[in-house]
Image (cartoon, rainbow, N blue to C red; front, side, top):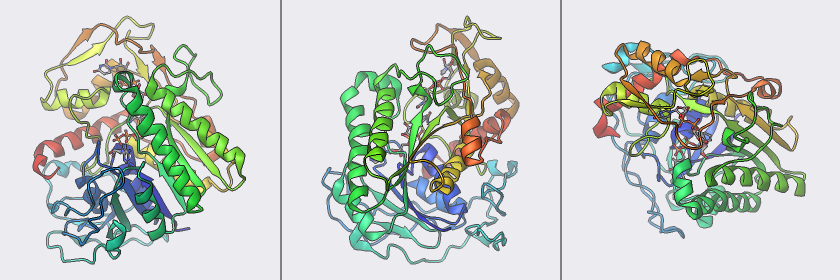
Length: 436
Ligand code: NAD
Ligand code: WQD
């Protein structure tokens, strides 16, 4: 059934891929993002993958109303897209893997919004875009591209006025709440900022949802809520004990949502605990876009491969693991995105609160990932062994059985696909820096 989904943080890494899958499943998507860790052009690229090549390229009439939080008013024009080859046919995930032609994109026919009927849409060329109707509700602060089913509000999730305007303009069926800060190290340095943004943002969102009579929420939690000294594989009932402020914001929000659901029967809450998201969209035009020097392994490897970083530092090779390096459960970001669509599809049948791991259940070492990346990019990834990173566990991977049982979902994309797609995205970024 077609629904209208509010995606907070929908311009970010996981949110943007989830928007693609929601649109492919036939839903209407309203993104709210303050762009603190993402780019406006991501909206355009989501729309292009979803089959509307025009994305958000045109200057739009907007509401210049300043927001309570001081966030800049919405409505700057989106950057004009250049022709990019994208999905010619929908698949289960809504997108068909593409060939290596993405390193040298040419205009091709693309998929205009896959339908749920299974009828294959006819592709169109984006080489000569024609004007489209945009932003039919200029007073709401919402920029719209009706053809793609994608709408965008540039605002902070703590901004009650912006949320109320959004809920007044769109009849939202459910919310997927990605908006949050996510750097473990930064959270140790700036705990108040993390509690304010992550916990405060969630409280503001929940209050606005209640005012608008919206009671369905899927929340981005993290494997970081599990106790670091626990024994993998981690199950949803494994011991909890986050080791840093970031992780504690996630656990606090899980508890807030659980208390809320216990207080009133109309709420349905799904807490998704992600393991290590990696990879990018198969098209190569959407992926992780970390600001500054990345912390996570896959973007570091990718930047070494493309020459932006000289070499990778492997944090420790003396762990009790097969090759001595840390083991993690890397999950393709598109699998993760599909997991959110599955959670929404199942939410009415689920209990008031469901906690589900999204992982593959397979542990991969740092050196295994480096080797896979070298296969994908066809060049060496220089590295040196460095001291262990403080706070790192030796091994961390999921038991994903509960998500399979409850949602009928499991990860299907392997490490090679993650590396191939991350590499494709890295190359696209290098070639299209001006468009980002
Ligand atoms: P991201 O930084 O790419 O995306 C987060 C998005 O939220 C960004 O677009 C950012 O601009 C936006 N945002 C942040 N604060 C906001 C605010 N106050 N108001 C409006 N927008 C705001 O991160 P991601 O990797 O896509 O992560 C998405 C969610 O998943 C986060 O909540 C994160 O904690 C969680 N998570 C991420 C990982 C991971 O390794 N990437 C793992 C587990 C959980
Ligand atoms: C993976 C492995 C490192 C970088 C973090 C957060 C967690 C979650 C996911 C949000 C480890 C090694 C890394 C490098 C390396 N995020 N490594 N050299 O630490 O498992 O999880 O991201 O919720 O909360 O803590 O991910 O990608 O940083 O590290 O050797 O330059 O790669 O030691 O073994 P991590 P990661």
